Image (cartoon, rainbow, N blue to C red; front, side, top):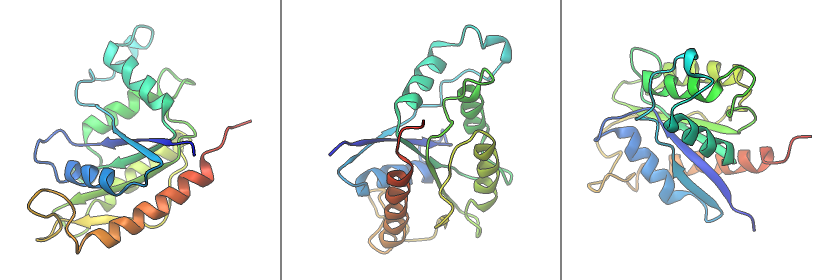
Length: 186
């Protein structure tokens, strides 16, 4: 059986990030035919259209990794009711120069953790708008606006036994999403 390469795109740089904990937990519950990798977006320079003809080596590397992926999982915190700047910067780099986006046609899922009662609902909606423009098919349901409450993660930083069924259900839906959309384009 051919394996699917799935990139986890985490919109946080913080070492104790809840969203990094979620990303690490997703790697543990992914099916055996999924190869999960984390896309490093923290060292990218700020996007500048003047650099489109000679992009930085980190940008070239990131775009090559995305081009090789079969799917994407965006895991985003919510900053000021939107996505973090580091995530927007990575999206901008991957979508430029115009007409050469590496994001197009990569099936994606979105989820995130926040301390707020609405989880990352606003950030996810903004991200959906951006990804729709970039021709990224995003799984619509189930949505996962996860609030960090006591017991979400265990002492080792993984999803607790009580939290696991919800996130496993999301992952099961995502696996079906990838299998439906993972086919060559004509």
